[in-house]
Image (cartoon, rainbow, N blue to C red; front, side, top):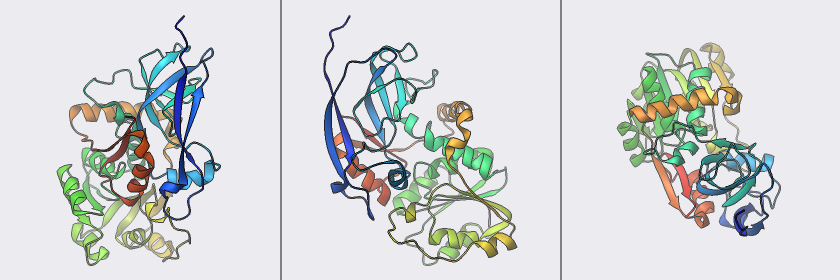
Length: 335
């Protein structure tokens, strides 16, 4: 038997629920010594952490003040009493913002067995993970994007949006993306978007959408909400589909906005608007992940990570991601 060594786990906790934009003072670092692992348990050391927009609305729904912040990580198995997770293997864990955790393996997912060495394991939190699956299933099962159709994506340079655009291109669609900086627009052109514009600098959102696709849009993959959605709905073609994935423009609002209502455009253009979360396809995750991995290996799906070094900088990375500081997936390395 190996001699048991005490393992110190460091965690970011939510000391106070967010009001408006998250602040550094909402978070507190806590340290605990973890007990020895029992039968069936696994000790995991985090290597990569994810910060995602969903954490902002879900923190209110799922957490009490004082809890460890929710989220996923990629970790390496340090000690194991569970044959499904051998020492040295890697897994995606939902342990949250914590450096070391003990699990019975239920909320751990081993990395795909055929994961190539040259592909960063952090992609299991992005392109070959939840954001990739969100893009894959949202586009295929909610937007039903078909070859030759015109797809609009907002928040297009983010973790999900940048993949939506590329998968739409793989399907054979024309793709238009909107993002919030010239660097992001440049990035979208590099990864194959047909048209891209900076919504912050165009004089008229309506004009920008018309110029990018005079004939309108068949599919709108919606990540932002607010005013953008109001304007984009009026640009939809007959029988268009809107997949409502996120509403990042509204997550920090303390007062609910009032905007135009959706009824008239929905009726006149006979549109379908459907909200979704990726858990709906839980029983098909492997199908999606295998496909995403294959596309990455083939070079059809380019990934871009916005990496923040050091667990101590995690709250700042989260705050920055909600402000749009990242191009592609926001990742934090443990060290």
